Structures are given as C-alpha cells and as structure tokens.
Length: 102
Image (cartoon, rainbow, N blue to C red; front, side, top):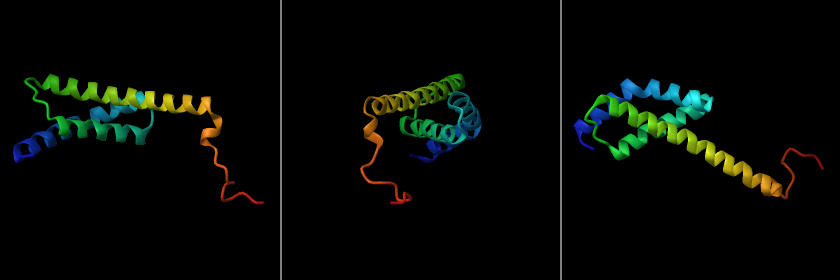
C-alpha cells in the first residue's frame, strides 16, 4: 500500500468509523460485537480498496459491507444453535467440570 492509499483509508476511517459502529450496534445490540464488525468492515475496505467516484458511493459501500457482516454473524450463530439443537450432546464434555466436587 502506498502513501496515498494509506492516507485515503485513514481519511475514510476518521470520517466514517463512528457512523459504521453505530449502525452495527443498532443491528447487533452488543458493544463488543459491534466493534468487531466495524473493524472487519474497515479491514475489507483495506483489502479491496474500491475506487469511489462519488463520496456517497463510499458510504453506501461501507454500510452495505457492515450490514452483510452483521447478518452473516446472525446466520452463523443460528446455524451453530441449530446444530446444538440437533445434537445436544455435541457441546457436553465427557469429563466433569474442573470445579465439580466428587
């Protein structure tokens, strides 16, 4: 990444990070998870480095990416819960918890 690209990404981050965080938080409802999803949104920006002809496209790209990440999180969580529902033994261990008394 050259100096110009780095400056461009830093500028977008400064201008948009709070908006993206509030958007993620409004969807997922949890502060820490919203922070993680916001971070991943900007990591995807760094990896893909799309070119925006219009600043509105920049905002649209960020919010679309953030929304997809939030919804993907829920899909993965739902899938994980369904697999545990199908096999309740899957999450249990064969040994007692370390704090259990014999």
